[in-house]
Image (cartoon, rainbow over all chains, first blue to last red; front, side):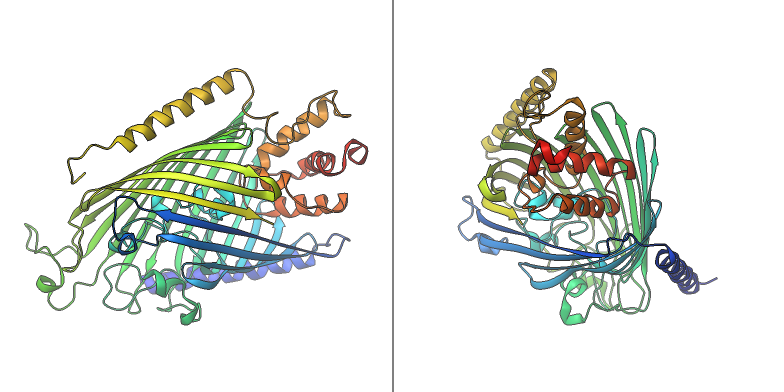
Amino acid sequence: MSPDRSRRRLFGAGAALVAAAAAAALASPARADGFSHNFAGSVQIDYLSVPTEKYPARQGFDGATVELSLKLAMDFGDKVSSSVKVCVACHGLEVGLASFDLRVADELNVRVGRFIPSFGSFPIRHDPANHRTSDKPLPYDMGRMLRLREWNMGVLPTPWVESGVEIGGTVFASSGQLDYAVYAVSGPKAGADAADFDFIRSRSPDRYYIDNNSEPSVGGRLAGTVELGPVSVMLGASAMTGRYDPDRHLAFFIAGADLGFQIGQAFLRTEYLVRRTEMALGEDPATRFRYGPGEDGEVDNFFLKDGFYGELEVPFGDLEALVRFDGLRRFGNVLASSQLRSRSAVLRYTAALAYRLPGGLRLKASAEQYDFSDFDDEVALHLGIAGSF
Amino acid sequence: MRTDRRRPLAAALMAAALVAVALVTGELATGGCGSESRGFGVVPGKGGADQSLARACRLTERRCTRCHPIDRVLDAHVSDPADWELYVSRMRRTPGSGIRANEEAILVRCLVHHSFGAQAAR
């Protein structure tokens, strides 16, 4: 069976399962409390200063930035709910969530529409009001890191919003739980001659949130939580694969693993992501790429990008402290115009404080030391206010 | 990495990390970890609270902070105790929330106590 046919059959089976779940959910007696809705949102205003750089705007989005999200959730009884969320950040107004959840039981939930597919542990905390720094860990960076253009951001920029369907659920045990999710989504996008994902094309409403290659990307996540007295241990693994160019020639594969510990309200979190991305070699690889053929006479048609973070978050009354160590690496050929090399890395050391203010606001301050393999090292200072309502 | 200059900030950050770890260790050793200084601050025998309410609030803190800071609960503007039932029910249905069906009432009791006092939570 060809890969195309296999993917279409998989998608067809998923669609049939969605229809069955919808029928089961709608046939189940809804709770008598009828419809209810909730309106919520968050705002973060952050100022980034780079004292080691005379022209920081050449490296990233310095100065003041605003991130805003507004969410409306609607419950249609106990089995069906819908959510719509719009966000404004560096890239303008966009739909971050527009989906229906069809919930049969704890063990089976079907989500259809536009949503963030289950991948890794950080995305559930991606909202600025839900994490303690002004920016995200490097593997999930979506434009706040220095040298973001040279690095093309993180491994899987978050929030990574996709259109499609996800089937998931939770199986509870006496001292823990197992969460699973599988999904088929439109997937990342780029042009026909791509050498990496085009993140603007992947998320921009100018492209009508439609697929670019008539083929879904598929993925899944399996995560477990064990509660040992006051300690919770969270372990998860995620994967996603597909092709991202219009001609379905360029494949990608992303894998991730995460391990976290919760003691009271203190958290120790670690996570690792790796992405293998195929590149279009073009008619003349010698001029398109910086490096020539390898010892086997072939020009590699892919690169590897991986990233990690480890962070400790501890509350002290109304003050929270966070220390983080994160990094990115890239292995493989680069375009002739790139400032990276065949082996590039960036490490970052972060110390952050967040102080709870009246009215649900939080003052965030952080200092970051960037350690680049291909550029001068930099210091970045963030000061911001985030709040939710 | 490319330059040879010293990185005093990185050293300071790592020192801060060590201090944080030390503070955490001390905090955990005393059994605190912010459970009373932060969060719902429910103490048995104080303000009509009993042991089961204290346990309920510890569970609430544990479940809520899995996805978001406890501030989002502490600072929530809720005008009716019944609203907490809807919120907790919605959160429980969120994939991966980790809230069991039989925990809904326990969490609601703590949240109603927080917002409306001991009488409303009975």
